[in-house]
Image (cartoon, rainbow, N blue to C red; front, side):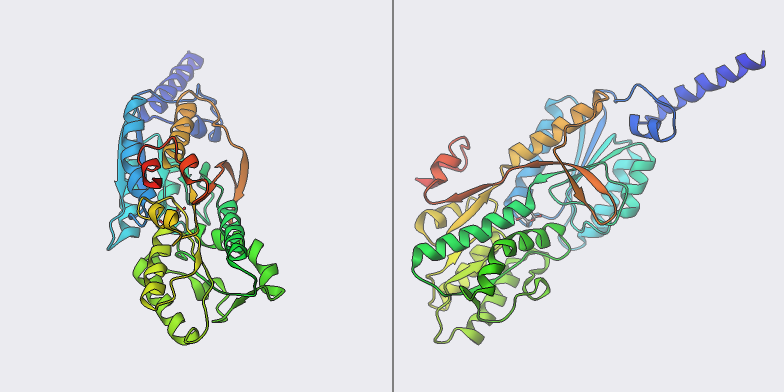
Length: 361
Ligand code: BGC
């Protein structure tokens, strides 16, 4: 009799867990192996940062469509511009309360969501960091991005290639980086310096301002006004009668800001890098005003995120191909390869993208 009562309790507990929507991960962690997976109409939360570049603008709509197409319910939120960190914290809290089974996060500040992802994990949700890793937390299941270090290396290599094509060195160069609250910014910068540092050391590249440290070259909030004003200051202080040959810019938005600055200063003839294949930058690449960009097709990244969600729904382990350290744990990671784009290969690279390919004409 006692035995039966216990069994009934156990059955009730399992039923309760099912009602509470515990995921396979939570089941595994509590030691009660479940079937895994979750219902096809479950809620999938997507928390995106403020729209500092076109890739983020595109991601929201692509996520809504892809989630609906796969039959899940979606809750896609952006952080606002004035209070992005508290916005994102509140949005993720709400997704947990609403019972999201997976929460996909493109963080505004990857170091300030620890309490939210802990609560998400506690509720049984799976946490996927999208494009930007979440730092200093154990509560992250997967990371999905274009390989950021490779992006930086490609920018560094293209800067050298562009300068060499322009003429013999040494070359006068300035460095720009992204926002320090975005972990990607340092990774892009380190990737670029992996290629550029030997050339700085051997005198091929001369950083005239002397500003070579990440902290000296960052752009808070990825804000173009900041980059433009720093470029204005650098030009005024260091380039009166000196030619500026090249600029390392971490993305297209900031490249356009720097191009505005050098044009206003009457020194437009620079080799400058970018990233994101923004519609506004592609004509500049074709005209030779911006030397290169990186193609990180947002459609592919969102599709890869949905592949992860579908695998989790089926109770399977999502495919990964790398591990990334987030300053706390090694995070199972899926990296996509970024593609370098210059005027030479733009039409070919964008051939499958009806929004971008016409811009190369
Ligand atoms: C993304 C870049 C983007 C930047 C600014 C980074 O985290 O990886 O593609 O240019 O944020 O929005």
